[in-house]
Length: 232
Image 1 (cartoon, one colour):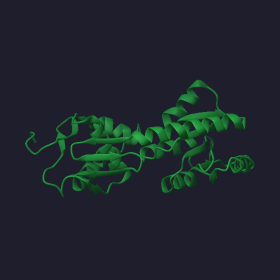
Image 2 (tube, one colour):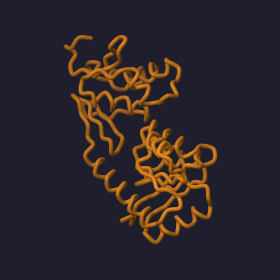
Image 3 (tube, rainbow, N blue to C red):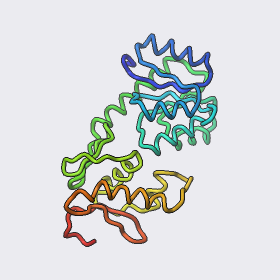
Image 4 (spheres, rainbow, N blue to C red):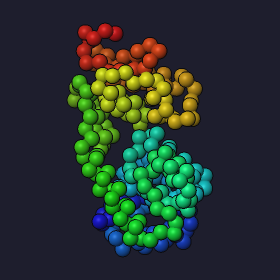
């Protein structure tokens, strides 16, 4: 059921936008609308939605670019892509960009409703379970918050993603390359960008505490350690 679900619709076709609005109103969902990719991205970053309906062909940023940017910035809201494309490569590109599912235009509203409900239900189930921890560090993926020794860490979305990967590794080494790809994909930034983010993460994660947890493994990557007695 979509009742009371908050849905962001990013669609530049005003007629279709209106039809979707009428459908969501009947289903008693709460809908916000954007007519281009930039506006959709900003709304998704600033608000907590249960799902995003995202058209592929949009002005300014297309749907795949929007999805990619949202995932890089740590937004885990389910994305249902609306697409007139139906080739296998096009559909794979949609999933690669971060979309969770798609419907092909023209679509029927029972299908749209079923896919939205499934995405929302699955996401809420996953989010409810996603508390990650390693040593003193605790990550809450539902609220996108983190703490060390019960003290809240103030993290940007990128710092949150880096720390989450380190916690998931449970003391294993996370390579520079995997972090760069996770954050920026093939659009590799200047090599100093990751170094800058690691520096900022150290300031938040380590400096206020008794010992540094974030360890650099030269020529390999980074890991979290559990005590000051571990080799530095």
